[in-house]
Length: 136
Image 1 (cartoon, rainbow, N blue to C red):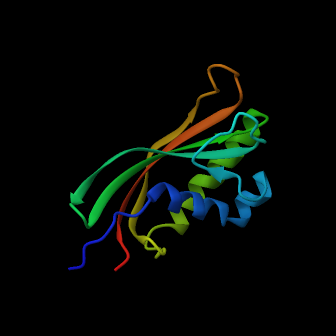
Image 2: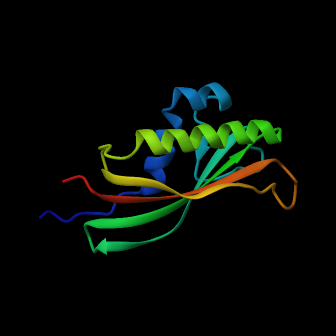
Image 3: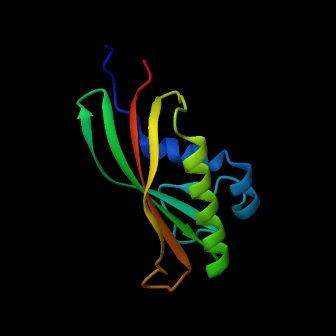
């Protein structure tokens, strides 16, 4: 068995979301990232690593990510999170990336309405867990 560097799961999720034509229709090109700049144009998706654990150290990891979909309205934020969830449920599992292979991808938490506490900007959240190993 070849062991290697554990892949950057956040980067893989961002890549998948940015490669989606359906998401581009809603939010424009390259709308997903791991940061939300203060002057970010909405709609936008932020992907945040929110936990995980090694199943087989150095080989298989269970990784959790939180997806935040921001919009100029509640409906726009909802449409974006719904499409992001669809993409992650259908286009990631079994996919081979330069960094690694995603063995599974499961939505762990349903959609949560959570407007930004400071600005009240419309936002929905969803949580996913994936199992990933390096690309030998």
